[in-house]
Image 1: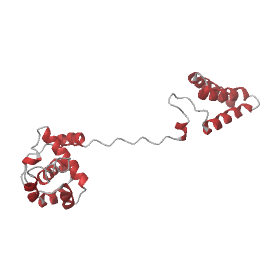
Image 2 (image 1 turned 45 degrees about the horizontal axis):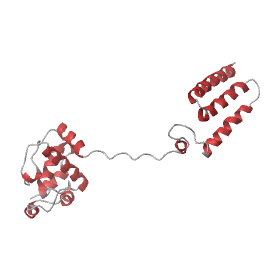
Image 3 (image 1 turned 30 degrees about the horizontal axis):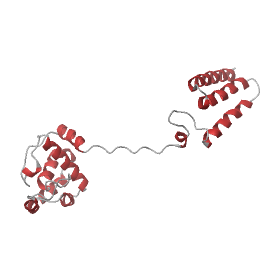
Length: 198
């Protein structure tokens, strides 16, 4: 009977992964949990002493997705010849299980992580096209350029450095050589800092 295996599955510490997988593998109907065909000739005989993946999970007090991951891992190890296939096992029958390192390898192979969803682009990302050029029709870009041009109206001894910073900022976004503009910006900024320190 499969019930004791399900109950034990639910109480074992997580470090007993390979043994827990064996409990599920020998008690859940082969084909259930990995997209297998339930219409095999042996289905009716298996249903008397084995459980569906959902029934096993319910009895164990875990999610059916958890049991499904264990079954997928067992099936992957069986395909590699490390453990016997589920259809050759019976509830209550112990078989040799692999070590934790082998289990972890096949678990990751059988249950790859879901790909991460790309994050939504920020308004700043939307202002830049794939070539790294600035989109002049973007309202944020226009406002930033207006602000940069406005700084050039500063009077006094700081006016030349501020003007060069303003021009460099504009050239970084709009010029033909943003790298050169960046260097100009750094130099102008250094000049302004030197003047402020005097």
